[in-house]
Image: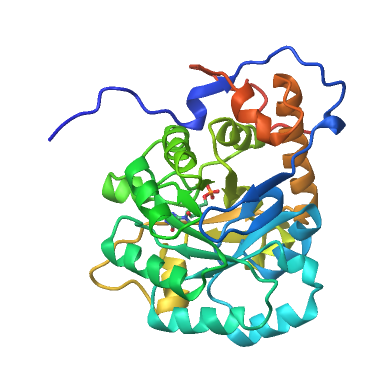
Length: 349
Ligand code: 5GP
């Protein structure tokens, strides 16, 4: 046993120090980024936010709205090939620029992935998503996917440490997904004691990835748009959002009424609800590592997205970054023991 003495940081432990700026208005801030990927050699331009590949977040309806903002959606792996076929043939090609196709690690997942990619050469992103990206089996599967799709952008995860980020990039990933345990409906830290405060994971993993010419996604733990700014400030190239996009019309989740208020269900992909739905219940040897929550229905995601992008532009103006790309080098984090003033929380008119 050993103990690492330095305290790792989450989003709640820091704020960003403002800096002198020559920017006159938030409208001068460019949130678009151009990436050139290490292993696939592809390029992509857009706003590097991603709707999570959870079944109520990474939906085709979400793609329709977020693509209009040039934001990505990691479409969940539970749509059948037939649904994919209908979707790909019904949207303009430009929409497909903002689609990530998620896959699991089964043989049948690989077969389905190949069929989906045969639908359109405009599909360019693959996300191989497992709760624990540290297994040899995962690395072997990643290598197989890279061999099968040499020119597609591959995201792989989740991990939280630099050495594993390097191994995944050297095994074919263009982008490594970073985050274990920070998610809004995740109970991994409670069940297993495994985890890593998200901001430190981002700082350490982005350093490892950038050293090799790779990129990272900060996945999980963003509660407000300030957290997204902190993730980018810490070095994240992309930020993935679940809870912040939950409860909207585009989520395709169960809507119901209670006391004249409209709610929508949201649950973790390792929750009992998800396992009941997709694998016929919780296997005897497994623990549930996610929870189900009911959220007040929030209407269309369009308004939420505008709010998030407005917040990010404002962060950039406060530190004098004219583009999102500059945010990391303009960021000085200060460690704090306070965040917002909560006096009137839940009393908003
Ligand atoms: P959020 O933005 O809601 O804080 O985090 C979203 C992320 O939480 C997802 O992208 C995924 O990585 C993670 N996640 C989703 N469902 C579960 C779950 O049931 N258990 C765990 N441990 N993580 C989950």
